[in-house]
Amino acid sequence: MQSQPPVNPDSLLGPDEESNYDLFISRIQETGKVWGLKAKDGWAVCPSLEFEQTDVFPFWSEEADAKIHCADDWAIYTPSVISLEDFVENWLPGMHEDEVMAGPNWDADMSGLEVEPADIAERLAAE
Image (cartoon, rainbow, N blue to C red; front, side, top):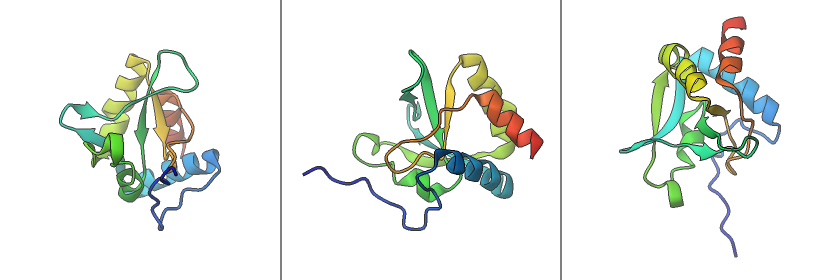
């Protein structure tokens, strides 16, 4: 029998990927924090399911939603905070240059949208 992924009972994430993305934008603007997963050798990254030879950096608006992924193959990672200012000024432009995608507020099954960093920057600037 396959084990179920851990669940954050307080999570606001739901089955609608667009809603999870909207929540990501609103919450990081509220808190000024973006959460990623970091290990000694760097940040967690996944292969894209949508684009060949493209990587995706998963990010969350809540530490608890990031933390549930720090198990099994990803037990080496811990949630690490990135200030919104650093995310906007350094991460998003750097990811754009590197042609990688962002995965905002992926659910417990690591399912969610793959978003261009420039699109996140535009959303943040517009709201």
